[in-house]
Amino acid sequence: MNVQTHENDAMKLTSQTLTQLPDGVAVPTYDRSKLTAGIVHIGLGNFHRAHQAWYLHRLMEQGLAHDWAIVGAGVRAGDAAQRDRLAAQDYLYTLIELDPTRTTAEVIGPMVDFLPVAAKNGPLIARMTAEDIRIVALTVTEGGYFIDPATKGFDATHPDIVHDAANPATPKTAFGAMIAALKIRRDAGTGPFTCMCCDNLQGNGAVLRQTVVSLARMSDPALADWIDANCTFPNAMVDCIVPATGPNELALARSLGIDDAAPVSHENFRQWVIEDDFCAGRPDWDKVGATFTDDVHGYEAMKIRVLNGGHQMIANAGEVLSIQAIADCMAHPKISALYEKVARSEILPHLHPVPEMEPDAYLDRVKTRFANPRIVDTTRRVAFDGASRHPGFVIPSIRDGLAAGTPVKGLALVEAVWARMCAGTREDGSVIEPNDPFWDVLNAAALQAKVTPAAWLQQKQFYGDLGAQSGFAQAFEGWLNLIWDQGLEAAIDAYLKA
Image 1: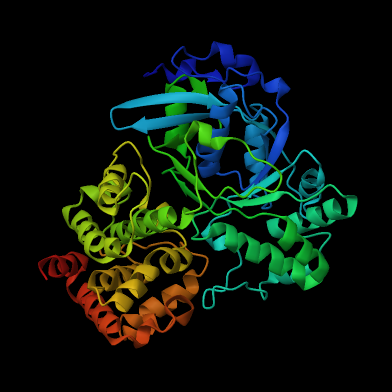
Image 2: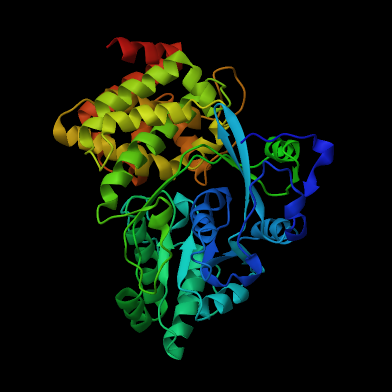
């Protein structure tokens, strides 16, 4: 159903005004005053609110899972502003679905609280110790799990980790807070909770287990053993394109008749594939479209390499060519052709079908999703944190190709485009502002690689031994030289004609 009104008529979103919203806006039909908490979710950004919270809302609409409401939490100072925005509207917010042909809006209400953000995480630790909390979930970005980029093991040297190991009762990190709460629960006999990662990481449950157990072991080996033996860390694949909220999204909500300080826009697609490994129970998310399976890896490999890896290909090229949105990148004939050829010839051969989806069909679906002009997802947002995303989403396909003897020249071009982007300027001369936690390192290597391309591949924390793989390294050097000499479009043309 389409809804539209005038911005000046927008109604402030609160529990009291739900019945006064425009008729076309769906609102919760369950009694939110009777919901009780079951989940603490750390990192209450747009993705969680459009994805996991939506599935829970759907269950609640069926009269189910009313004892699994969400308590929001954050560990960064900036999370306090989000708390203030949501608290002022009773933790309600609007989800705006941007189908290519229509706009629909619904207000969802599975969140019942958002904890105060404190430097030593006291409120968060206290809430996670309560017996009603049976799942602690996180969306803290791919780069937030203290993974050593070279070894993929736990990075015990990070200052925040060193602090938490020395001060386990007053931690800085979400993981330290989880450990502190689990210690109290163990000592009180309350029992464990499920630790659930909802970030785009292959084997994300295993990654979360590594971080939590390794950090606990630095200060309390016995507690680490207890967590490892009693807590569960289900792997999961999550999928939905959710742009950041800015002035346009706020204005869109108002145009729909809703004065919402924290609306979320999203595409008309969601997928959630979960390993059924919950030590303290779970909601029946499968009743509203989630998939429980023992083969999460097959789903996540397809999604991470085709969608997330594809996002990096498209966004990096778009940044170099001054294209601001992903849909506009897909409308650029050379960028879209680059993505199509690399994905079909160099990524899909290493993927396997999953139930109801062949890799070729999945690529076609992703291309359609990327091209949705209603989703104004910026190249800058998608290109963020390439230092985590290229090693996680793109480089595994390179290694598979080298091992199988299949082409990697297009993937070498993709990495050359990333190196060109990290030089910090676009082809029109405009500046690319720092957009990575490791920007200084990347920028220095990219500028050196302009003269000596091999310098980029010498970043072993990302590439390991790939710089010594002559077939890949030579292709990379040729592409980067061509990009700097004749421009990115000339390099893409050369690849497409090869």
